[in-house]
Amino acid sequence: MNILLISTNRNTLPMPVMPIGACMVAEACERAGHRVTMLDLMFERKPHEAVRNVIRSSRPDVVGLSVRNIDNNDMRETAFFLEDLRRIVNTVREHCAAPVILGGAALAVMPEAILRFCEVSCAVLGDGETVFPLLLERIAEGEPFGDVPGIACLDHDGFNSTPCPGQGGATECGAPGYHRWVDVPAYRSQLATAPLQTKLGCAFQCVYCTYRKIEGNGHRLADPLSVADAVMRLADSGLRDIELVDSVFNVPYDHARGVCDALAMVKHGARLQSLELNPRSFDDGLVSAMERAGFAGMGLTVESASDRVLEGLRKGFTTREVHNAAEVVGRHGIPCAWIFLLGGPGETQDTVAETLRFARNAARPQDVVFFNIGIRIYPGTELESIARRQGVLTAPPEQMLRPVFYVSPDVDAAWMMDEVRRSMNVHMNFINTDSIGLSILPRVHRFAHLLGVRPPLWRHTRFIRRGLRMMGMDV
Image (cartoon, rainbow, N blue to C red):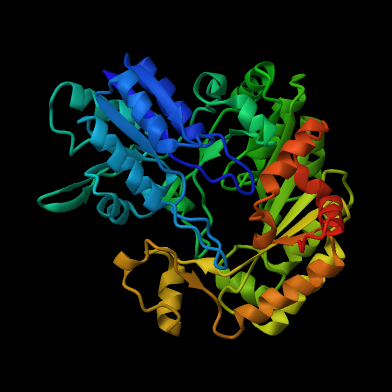
């Protein structure tokens, strides 16, 4: 069949993300014998015209729409992406009668609500590269597909979903040929990195998180040698800035060490980073292995430096591990992004002050400290139950597709924002969601690219903020 895949994500902030999932699905469909056309809408100035044109040229039998995010998770400047998705669905239907299938990470989070909102009857919930070809086989044969593992459907009987295919054991380290499917030079001009996963699944139980819904709660590990091979292939294709986008890179610890050791054995020439490290499994041995492997940046998702808040978030570590992580970081040269999430269960003025004090003491000049305030509440998470018990949330689950946020009733959101801004005025390597939502950021990326700056750009945050302030911008 003729298959048209459309990557619908157009969010370029803080930087555009290459659609690894859609590219892997495209290649899986080709292996199954289908003819595949892919349209990436990231840089399309007239997306609906682009959709019309590709439908005319490809004459698809099936159209798959890849959906990365529901919204931008920003309580201050919330962007709801599904309105644009619904318009794209309507454009597709205006110009062809092919079945429309939704897929991507967003669908696993709230499948029924998204299907109803977009008026689409079928979605892929499991690994797209496995499930979508099975679905296409049924469609090609004109057979019912409601029992295909890993899909969700809306019909006259209502909403139904099938269990995803087995989520234990191993996984492949997919390094798709990005050059075949997307405008790689456009991504590189924005300092975008090439995504790569060394594992799927998450064993943590953070109260707000949806990773377990998306990838499962059991780890599926890629062989470290296959990860090294994938990095080599990406680097040989010219993609030398690579981000390992596992939900948590350093858990299991032995697997992360194995990946680093395998990478250190090959001359890949790539600059690696991972912004998803956990303080619980973080020591000098790991960071030394990351240095040998070629890491140019790392991020610690600490969320808070208060035991009370860490317990409320069910992070699985304490401030003892947080302070130990700071000591480890200080003994090594890799720039670090410290990531905090203020306003969680148990947050008070005292716990906010504790976190800000830690950030001031822990972050080095080459590091960046990012503060997000307010936590997106998703149906079915423990945070939803907490919010309802506390009276913070009254909306029914079916009305939570549009973003709703949690802030501890023991602290004022405006006060937290003011405290963060005061710290940002003193520390030029501190940023918040306003900083990564600046409309000028794509131009900053292009200018840095022309100057030969390589990712991660955030290690130069203090210089960028000072420069923009000299230009009269309040950043």
